[in-house]
Image (cartoon, rainbow, N blue to C red; front, side, top):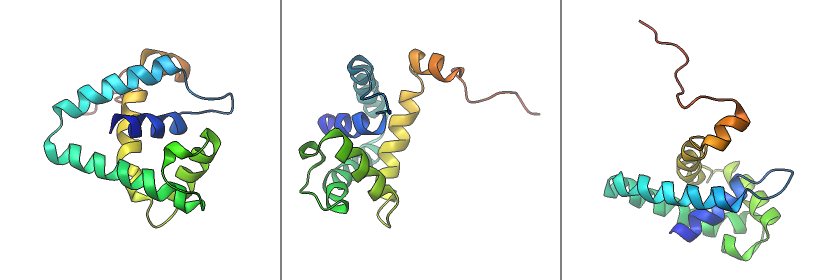
Length: 125
């Protein structure tokens, strides 16, 4: 499962400048492993199922042979974007949401985006 998550994350966090920093991807996978270790079995199962669906359905959405690992980085990016905008898009929502939450917790990402560790900007009464 972690291999699928890594392949998904490498496509998700690629920019016009290129792939994400491999060290940050390693950190993300360690954080994901810890996160899923604390999640319930149902949450882990849904995450796995969503990753499996993306791994197989995303390549088919761009007329390529599954799995995502068989595609180039650019093809992975295009395949995941195409899947996300299709009727099967909700399959990508779970992995994308969890990986983004963890990605934006990284101190380098927070510096790059000029965000703070909390989503809360003010306390409302």
